[in-house]
Amino acid sequence: MKLRHNPASPYVRKVMVVAHELGLAGRIELLNTAVSPVEVNATLAAENPLMKIPALVTDDGQVLFDSPVICEYLDNLSGGGKVFPSAGKARWTALRQQALGDGILDALILCRYEIAARPEDKRFAGWTDGQMKKAHQGLAALEREDLSGPRTIGAITAGCTLGYLDFRFPNDGWRQRHPKLAEWYRGVEALPSMQATKPPAS
Ligand code: GSF
Figure 1: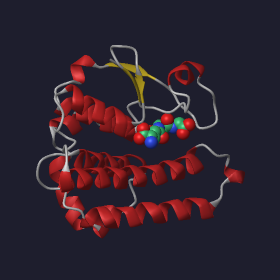
Figure 2 (figure 1 turned 120 degrees about the horizontal axis):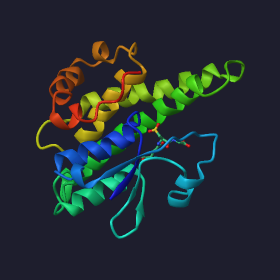
Figure 3 (figure 1 turned 135 degrees about the vertical axis):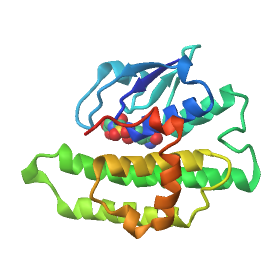
Figure 4 (figure 1 turned 180 degrees about the vertical axis):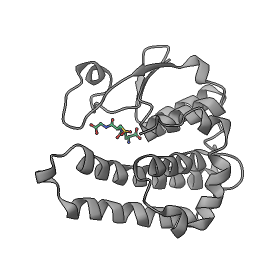
């Protein structure tokens, strides 16, 4: 399998954490891929028309995106029901938690593009404030989730979301606002799958 990859992407990290936890990381060839919301990457576009990473090319030549789909594919490859509970309340809880973590990331990424990619004279503070508010409301909801127990895609996504906050928004102060989440994350960031997928020093 080949994964369109960048070590700074939190969605790619989700996929790689899942791969490590399922013992599949060694089967994935990483193709370092630069993406930009304003530039065409023709090679990537031939695989993922949305020109986003992660995108996975399977051994039989199928292209899968986005990260929830790729993560579920990997779970299926390893027999199914490992990080995606197969049915019932456990499944809906894990999927909701994944959507919450992904949604926080989506808001943070939009802030990041506004701050890092848009020319200074064209920045719109109301945009950044609005997206940050969503991210903060999302984090408050994440604090109320039960992330203990078997590692599901919900907990994996939550861990990658907090890791991205530390990476790109180190002064956010989320640990002061959410001590329960901070305590939970202390154990999570030490896991081998999280250590193996740490983003590069920014
Ligand atoms: C989001 C992927 C994404 O935005 C998923 O895989 O879960 N819902 C998708 N990836 C970013 C890279 S990143 O910052 O993680 C991306 O490819 N951005 C390029 C663009 O054109 O927005």
